[in-house]
Amino acid sequence: MAAADRYGEGMRELLYPTADAYLAAPAKSVALFGMSGLGKTRTAAMLREESGWFHYSVDYRIGTRYMGEHIVDNFKREAMRVPFLRDLLRSDSIYIASNISFANLSPLSTYLGKPGDPAKGGIPFADYLERQRQHREAEIRALLDTPLFQHKATDLYGYENFLCDTGGSICEVVNPEDPADPVLTALADCTLLVQIEGTAALEQELVRRFERHPKPMYYPEDFLVTLWEEYRGSHGFAEDAVDPDAFIVWGYRRLLAHRVPRYGAMARHWGVSVTAAEIERVRSPAAFDALIASAIARRAGGEAPS
Image 1 (cartoon, rainbow, N blue to C red):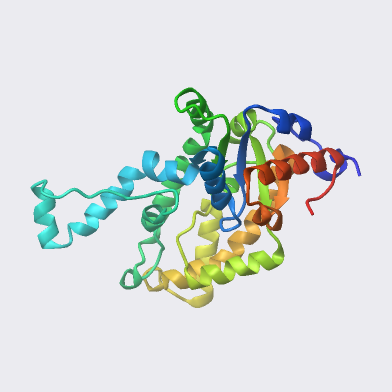
Image 2: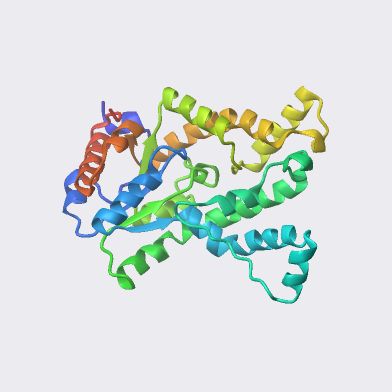
């Protein structure tokens, strides 16, 4: 099967057009994308720790540069409800900050929140929508910062290799069918886009994990509004009576189903794919390079990941 038959028309030329070109490159640059929980950040951490790849975390950039003030203001808003802390804040006697890190993005997800019953930790749906809009803008800006950080990695810090660790919602802020999409163009100009592709069984495992520990997510606005109205209509709940965890668990399966074809379109038109099983077996930088080279070769031959 020819590559064009598998990937379709509109395939963008890759940063590394052949496997040999990737392996011979003195400075490699890769952007991983796919569902959260399939190994992007684990792989990035391995490359950072074992061979000195520069790790650019898009979610970390969102939570520090573009939403950091929103996050801290939310902490302060909650602290102001406590008279003891309110007096200390007003007198500048205490300092409240977000301790966000690559491994702990809880301050960002906590700020996004969950809509519904305030007695169960929910926030008004209008506030939830506003925070979703803030996240969308922040994610786009953080993704567009990738070339800047690639330059910094080499020019300022002396790193040769660069890994962009994208968030799970990247597919919601781009149009993979548009050959002029500004975010994907910026990424493809400076990185090789690599999808980590899940399976139906892995998706079910992600759902089980999410049900045990539901966390706030980003949804495209039209999709989110439809979900909210469908959930409330089918259960007969007023906005402030919705159980926040129950709603986001209910919506998670639908969100996965919405994202999977979008990830696939990104890989078809803009990059390559590896499977979650393949990335799970990667335990060294050399194995990572071999896997990426094989993915490029598969694309050239029109083959599916194995």
